[in-house]
Image (cartoon, rainbow, N blue to C red; front, side, top):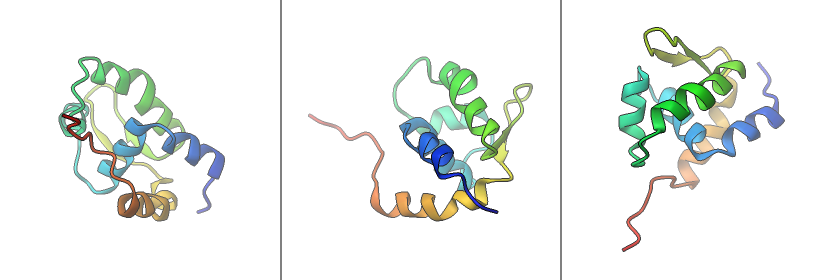
Length: 101
């Protein structure tokens, strides 16, 4: 399966979507609640942002499957095409928040 680079780079340009794809690809989350806990960015509106912006965009692109009824998140049919790019990010980008004190 080929990857549409414009769509993929649009997806990866956002930190929340980037981290979501990395977690889904690594099978580290299964629900929206687990994803919010793993993202740990301190935002009170994270669940709203995920369910109204990020997960619909990821699902539309085919990178995740998301059931809004039960909150389940699984790999989408196009995720495998994005894995080489996710591996590159995993090796070279540290998106975790750092304590700047």
